[in-house]
Length: 183
Image (cartoon, rainbow, N blue to C red):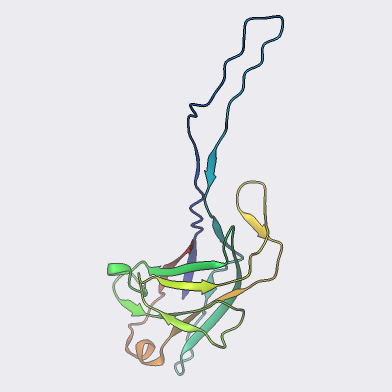
């Protein structure tokens, strides 16, 4: 039984260059000098890294299944961000499927490492005004980034015992998409 975490590193970096009308043409001579003004806007960007898939194995028949992962998030130009989680069930619900039946799970977020102080996320609902110290990220070959700072956030998945007891036998899987948007 596994949940694949899908990274949606939503950094919304906007670089917009535009034509400037203050350019000055050069004169016809042995050397000619012209000048142009250059302006652009660099928007804030963000990234989530160090995610891992959750593989719960076989349920023992009692208790809930619970696992969590410390990860690294970062933004440029701000320390505030929004987090949103979407499952791959109907209406973005947090569900695992065995091909015929669904099994609900819950998602918790913490803008610090560990689970102490975490809070439950609702599918498709943004949580705003979270804070995290800026991290530095280094691009790696083939795409992606390495966090050069400490891990600074946590995601936790819980499958309640009642849901497990009511579920049909089978192998269940699903995808959780985490979206971080700098504010």
